[in-house]
Image (cartoon, rainbow, N blue to C red; front, side):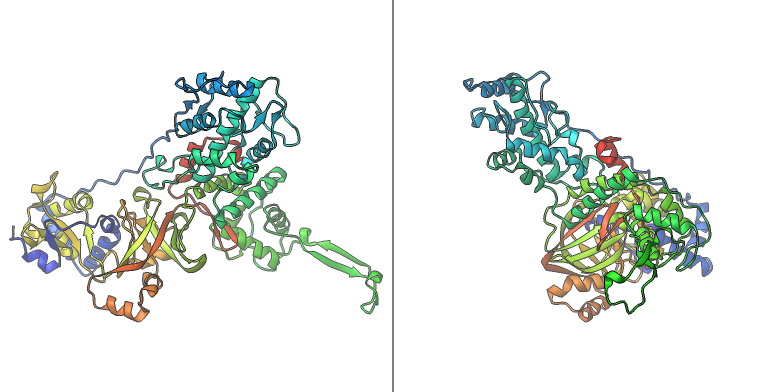
Length: 634
């Protein structure tokens, strides 16, 4: 073996002993793209890396890299509910009949026992103790106006993509706002009062933070919505006669929530009246083509709420110079039966194509017909319910200036005070290296970044190649650094480190072939995920862009840097000059930017609602956690 130093120095690779690794960079190496590209170019030149690799096989083992195992999400674990009772209640039993009944219920439990979320139990018991066990929602005459208003709200929980049956008290089963419920005895009234308080706290929790705990779904979901505390909910409800407005105000206030909610209502109406309409295959339909299938397409689009039939004049039997409108007699018909593929239908088809993630060219071909025939209201209703739930996980305030990445859309948007000021395509993680969902704050922008390889990639992906060919990293232009400084990879007997911790760190220096490109955007987080440029820009033209090791690659990253840094006093020219120096430079942002890495398979694009494919299978995970065949999904 040659001494450490010469071979690696020649290849531009440096070994270093205790330099910190950049896990995010390493995870997003784009190994296959980067290395295969270099290897292909060398082999085309006549030999190069792969010919060297072949010659050394006689004395070195062939590199064996085990494929990454697909991630298997855990089975969602629901919270175990606690019985709402506390035998340690030592208050004096009240004299009032309903008060005494509530006291007994909370001290000894009912039959059946009322079960609640563990975090709600203490607040509910304390609430009634502090008010001397006085009822909030009832009296000896039955339910009061406050209760009726809240029951009306709970009965409409399905409108929010929730499930009314999860909140209506068992004593009611269902609630008709037109009928006033009647009760036989005070024990029933007391139980109803407590059940209504339980329902109010539960509804408030779900409206403000979601119905499930997101991070239990997958290790790639790192969001922690904060529910309104039960103590706060009960205190606020006791001071208002409009609990319905209070609870409704806990739902997300984002514009997207309102749009998805309206679409849900419209689709449910369509689903109830929808007739099965199948569009036959045939020739491509383009503007002004006449085809009898257009009549079916018009009907389908009308039921989807994407097309309104126009009224057209057929004939007028009064001359144009008729003086009075009342003297004009015209006959009209609608375009509903027209076989002409006119501009109105083209526009509606474009909206449908955009909604379904197809190229919005307005041409009806096999892909569009298949989508129209398979795009049932039920599937879209289900997606809306799931994404309304995800909206409850978002921070209530996204930040005046914030970056919003939707992984399912492969897109990033930058907003400033509610205005969209920049958007770009992105590349996200492969299915086995999913980009996580989380929120953080952008603090740094780095020009000409180093790519520091973490130990996991160094040992699992690089070491097998080094054992097979010690010059592997030299040929790739990486630096290797040991305790004594930079060394050559070809001078190390890598077989000695198989199954052991490497005493070296690897990194890729700035340059045209660097996996991170010219610039990266850092928002420090436990996932070591960030946004960055990439040399593999051709991948941005692909409709499905899941190629990275977890980080987010940004199309036209230099333009994104211009927008981010303009508030810091930078100009496009000064940014380009800094990059052109080739020197690694970190810019500390004085004005931080909120970053939200999200996953929405139904989302808004301007005034349109678009549905995206569930590339990571997270819809199915969420659907199972919420419960199969739930009423809210129908």
